[in-house]
Image (tube, rainbow, N blue to C red):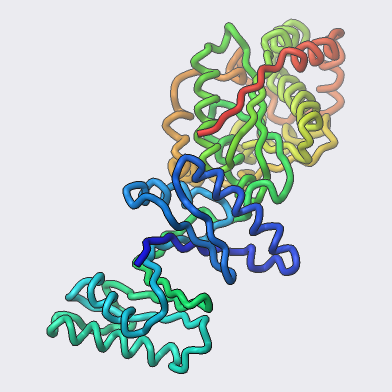
Amino acid sequence: MERTILIRIGEIFLKGNNKRFFTSLLKKNINVALENYQHTFVNSQNRMYIENYKESEECEILDKLQKVFGIYSISTAVKIPTDLDEIAKLCAEIFPKKGTFRVTINRADKTIPKKSTEIASDIGGYMLEKANGELKVDLFNYEFEVSIDIRESSYSYIFFNRLLCSGGLPVGCSGNGMLLLSGGIDSPVAGYMMAKRGLKLYAVHYHSFPYTSEQAKEKVIELANRMSEYSGEVTLLVVPFTNIQYAIKQNCPIEYMITIMRRFMMKIAERLAKENSCGALITGENLGQVASQTMESINVTNSVVKMPVFRPLIGFDKAEIIEKAIKMDTFKTSILPFEDCCTVFLPKNPVIKPKINTAIEYENQIEDRDNLIEEAIKNVETIICKR
């Protein structure tokens, strides 16, 4: 008898002739997630298993696997040679001796002459016999389920639970994306959702020292670290933004400051995205949440880039976003009271329906704007974030 972890994949099954690409990438991501744990990855007959691990580390390994995109569910199990009598004896030994239960059989090994229902009946009958009247069969309202997977490899797996995981697609199968990462609640959730669709994440953060503190920067690094538990390694690019914000304040009407600032952010993000082979930008924008996220504002900021901009939170309400942030364990970090650059020189009444031509007119008043962008990109700090 050997303890093992059974891994089930979700929509990868729908990938047809490309399934091998997705499963090999998932294997790589699983091994990276478990790199600090002794284990063996086994891929056999459309099944994935983790074997040869320390039982004392099982809970930690299960937690890591639940955060790997591409995995639908996992189960702890015991692996034994396929012998129906021995399987029945083991089930009677390791499962509770009282309560209601049912037996579920998956018989991949068609050389066994008995049908799945017959095997389930035999094993259930043996368990009832050994329980001395304390057990009852209930196929619908059961307290526990005895699940047995009989494989073609002459081995069977008896598993005890079914833990739902993050689902989605393996990170990296959809290319690279550049996330505009603030210190708030929304952008880490946006990154999580796009990583779930297979994007490997890069992130850009705008830091306005001394107006924003080193603590604000450390907060963003911690957010990127927490995101990496799901997305894998995140390359964080910290852009010095103070000179650009000061130039905007000196040359643009106060009500347009946020609009112009976000246009600069998008330009820089697109440049950095191209340098890092990213095919899209990602933002945490949510329609109507703040003045800079009206339809008109989004249109004005979007007009400065040609690259696709993914906004996975665009139709969410705040409660839904917070719920996901809590699940990711980024919420408590996001609400720490360290201001990001978007709060520097924040106008009391920002324009909510800006016009592109007006924004361009005010932007052109900043004569050295190209040099400011080049200087900011030249002084980017690169930080590799990994939990």
